[in-house]
Length: 230
View 1: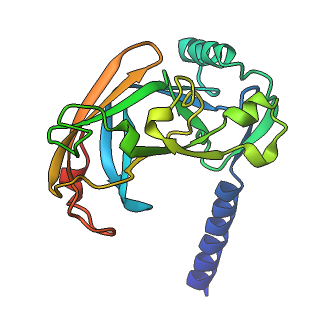
View 2: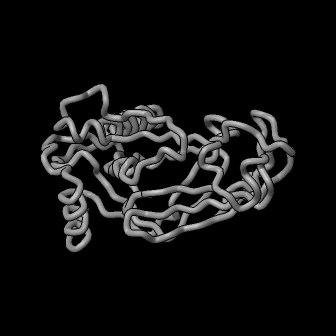
């Protein structure tokens, strides 16, 4: 009987703890963007949860500053929010794990260029930009912040556009999810060594190469260890 009672009490305590965790934590935030991510480089991988034709562009994270930070990190976070005009959200936010959930890369990418080591077609010999042959998709909070936090339906707006039409401030409030995709295949289907170049808002260039096999059909990808560059 005592053993059964202990088990019952243990289950009850576990349930209480789980409910408490599920409720999460609430904090006041004057800014909608809760965290800014600093980085020292970029990474490229096929995006396995959407389409293996999508290439995901990621930042190589080195540091984070957010509205829960203290000391100098909090000062840096506040300075970025003020520069971005995101200082009058003034609402209570719910964080299930007591960690920021709305985050952006800083400084944002102002330009993204893609090149190949091989001829793509007659108009795109090796080494020339392929931006007009690609689309970029991302989620942004720009419209919501610009509206004074009133356009609820636009909190996370998805943008899909040709890569060569990307504006220098389009990714300022990107919610860390940039996908690139070719709109056509090269004349000769093979593996191209692609060079990705990101120029951030401070003018710093970050580059990485990626072996992209155009012969892979939808739904297939290389092994992850060769797919993700650190």
